[in-house]
Length: 565
Image (cartoon, rainbow, N blue to C red):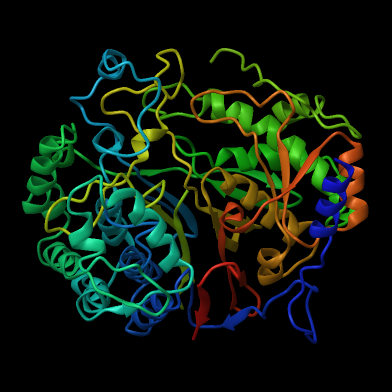
C-alpha cells in the first residue's frame, strides 16, 4: 500500500510544462490568439477555419457557429452531429442582452414508463432504439439563424457539404475514438458500416474520411429548411427506420418538435456575473459551486494548494447531490432554481464543509415548498458572441443510423430515471436531464468571457475551474485552460444515486506538488491519477471592451485551435 501511494505521489507531482516560454505560467502550451474583427475557437482546425471564412464573408457569429457545428458533426462524429441536441447562450451587441436557447428534444410520446417496467428494466439502455429522444440540433440552428443570422443557410452549410463529398484527414484524437466506438456498433446495428466504415477501415490518423450520405442530407436541409428534417423526407425515413428497429421515435414526434428561447440564470462571483442555462441541463451546479466557494480566499491559498483542491471538491459534492435530486425538465418538475442558486442557500450548505477533513457522504439540501460533446465559441466584428455546445451523448450516440442519411441518432434518453418518484423520471414528451452546458461571464453588464468545457458530468467542474483560474488566480484565457485540472469521481448520477460511502476519488492531472497530494491524503481524500478525456475539452473567447480586442483560447488536450482575423 505504501509503495502504491509513493508511486502515485511521484506520478502526480511531475510538473506539467510546455517548452521554455518567455511569458505565461509554466504549464502554458501557447499564447492566446488576439484579433479585432472576429474569433472562432473549436476542437478541429478545419472547422475553425470554416468559421473564419464565414465571418469574412459577412456572416454573423451565429452564422459561423452553425457552420462550425455542421463541420464538427462531419469531422467529429464521435461527439456530435445533427442527430443530437444543442444549447447556446448568445450575447447580442444590438440589444446588449444575453439570450438562451434550449434545443434539446423530448422522449417519444408513444413510449411509457410502464413499458420499461414490463420489460423488467431498471434503467434506460445506453444504446439502441429505446435510448433515442427527438434530436433538436437542426431546429436549434434555424431558430438561432432566424433571430441572429445573416447569410443564407445554403452558404453556411456548403463548406461541410464539400468536405463530406471530397473527404478530409482524420485527426489523432478522433481516429482512435472512431475505432473504439465502431467496434461497439458495427456488428450490432444496421447502416453503421455504410456511413462510418464503408470499406471496413480501421481508421488511423491521416486517413481520408468521406460521408456522401451526410452531404446529401445537408443539401436537402439547406434547400428546403428545417421542415425537411422534421416534416419531410428525412423525418419519414427516421420514423420508418425506428419502427423497424422496435423503437418509438416517430414522424409525429419529429413534426411536433420546437426548440425554445429561455432566460439564462446567473450568480455573482467577486464582481463578475456567471451565466448558465436552467435545467433540464446541469449548468446551475456550477453556480451553486461558485456560491459556496466565494466565502473562501482562494487567491491567498494559491493555485494547486491543498485548500484550493479541498474546498473545490467539497463544494462539488454538495452541488452534485442537489443535481441528482432536483434537476429535471422544468415543464414537468418544479425545480427550485432560484433557491438552489441563492447566496442564502449556499451559506447553509457551506456549513457542512470541514476545513481539514473530506466528507465521506453528503445528502441533498432541503428545499422549502417546492460523454461526448463538442463546444465552440464565436465572436464577430459587431460584438456579437455565442457560447455553443452540441452533442450525441455517449460514444457516437445510440447506434441508430437511419438508412441513407449519413448520421447517427443520439442516446440522450439514457439519462432518464425509471424511478417514478424521481424528478427526472421518464415521461412521454419530457426532456431528459442533460449534461451539455454553455457558459458566459459578464462584468458591469458587458461581455467578458464566452466559454465551455465539454465532457459529460465534468462540465460544471470545468466551468468553475476556468472561472476561478481567471478571477481568483489571475490567469489569461489560455493559461486557465492549460492549467492542470481537478476532477472528482463518485458523483451522483442524474437518476438519484448518492455519493459512495468513501466520498469518491479526487482525480488529478500531472502538475500538482507532492506536498499538496500528501496533505490531501492526510485530510482523508482518496487521490487518483485521471487521464485523457475525463478532463473535458475547453474553448474560450475573452473580450476587452476598452481596446475592443478578442482573446481566443483552445484546448491543448485535443486537436482544435483558436483563430481570429
